[in-house]
Image (cartoon, rainbow, N blue to C red):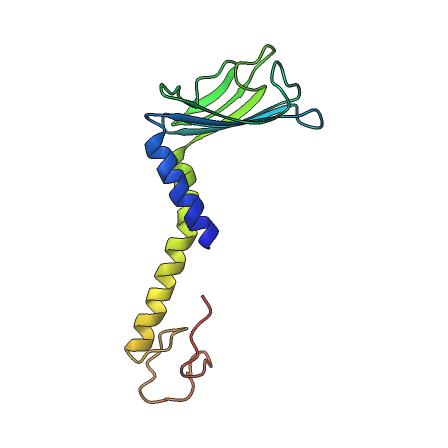
Length: 161
């Protein structure tokens, strides 16, 4: 839960920042994947991989540009719609052989949906318990103080969220 919130807020920060500055984390190696990139620019997030590292020294490198390109500005476009996209480049690569990009708002939505649902569930349970209802099913417990006759939950035992 906490990881999802931290990542979601980080994506929101990158989203706002991506219109002024682009961030690229590049990894180049010799085994399995020759080159990989995660790029944030102009409201989008791109993840790309190539089998060969063309002209990149092995290791991890961070790059920043003050005039960002959109994440969707790649050659070999296969699909692009509403900020989502897919590309397959032939050598020499501008970005990566295979790339997928998604809008930052979509990533933030995915990461922050679970925490919002969890907080809403906790709020509902707390409200039910404060008003004399069963925290699990909402049954009125004023007549039966020990156990809920509807679902069997003991009084004071909150529902598992």
